Amino acid sequence: MDFRKLRLVYGGIALLLFISGCALAKKETADEGAGSKPVAASESATPSNVAIREYILKDSATTVLTPDQIGSLDNRILELARNEIYARHGYVFKRKDLQDYFSAKPWYHVDTAYKEQLSPTEKQNVALLHTYEANYAAYTLEPVHTDDAHVRDYTGDSSFKQRRMLVDLNGDGRDEEIELISPTTELDAFQLKVNDITMEVDSELLPYLDIVDLDMDDPYFEIALQMDSQMDFLRSTSFYAYNGETLKQIGKLPDFSAHSSMFDSHGRVVSAEESKDFQTWFRDAVFRLDAEHTLHEEQQDFYPMDPPTPLTIKKEIAVQSHKDGTGESLFLKPGDNVKFLGDDKLGHIKLQTGTGKEVWYTMGDEYIDYSTYFDGLILYD
Image 1 (cartoon, helix red, strand yellow):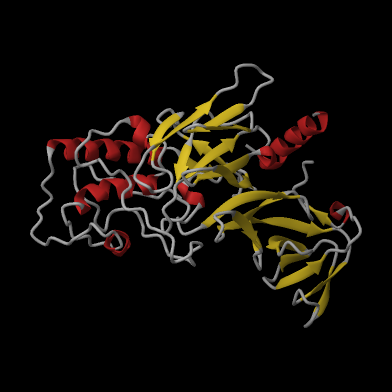
Image 2 (cartoon, rainbow, N blue to C red):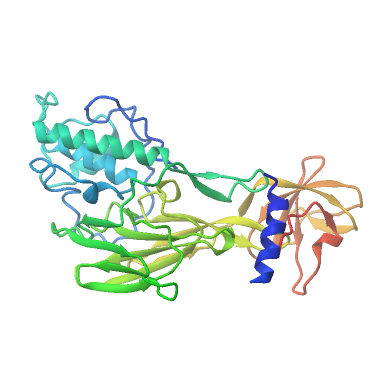
């Protein structure tokens, strides 16, 4: 479907109103090199004196798991929960990320003699976790438009996701009772309930909970609620944290960002944010957990357009080789072909000329209809 035509339709309506990429094994076995790609560590958002989480699922060695314990866990949590079963026996992990993760647990003791024997309960739990990892891998967040790869949507079946969960949210070893309660009338809102705490949340939510681990170096899992809309710029994801006493919203991000492809489990979350500067497009904004366990946006040096938008110059404009105005200045003439590469969110537009030279165009403070200077802009509202 042509993105620009679709956006024109949405604009009229508005005016009227990373997969984990897991190659799942077929057999019951601990992960080796064929598992999830290790996540690169980034600066931790958690103070060093914060307690660690000892277990993902502390009873998975002795109690058969159920969907309301694992159905809405993100795939990284699922993978760790499955490998946790082997780690209890001292399994020697070959993947460095798994080595590092389990070596930090006080109960983990390497046993080179362990041969992957499992009890019947453990085998059943490993199989169930494999099933839900496969479900998650098939429910993906993918680009849906050729003009802007930052516009994403879910594909696949979400019916495995849960509305009620029993999950240890704060790492104290006790499961919380979590529920997403639907509105009873059109005037009511959804309610999020954790144990005895209930709070109203957005009313157009996807009808399930996501339990995510935004930072595996702290003891917390977060609840994510995603609000859907036919108009992408109205979508959002709200993240909530529970510390054992209080439930708070720690961030409301634009678009869908609860899928594991949008966060690195080291405190960094990416979310597509609409921009109406120059043309209508979506930047990948970056958010990070701070020491107070709250998400804040980080300014990036550059926000790329993917793919670059092909444009034709209609009126002569001045550009510079450097965005600070230093270096060579030149003029782009009517009929010149350029590509919009992105911006820095501070009014500096990066273009690529027909010869491959990258230049900067500086937007002024006053409103300008840039369609009088550039032909081919994505404009839909």
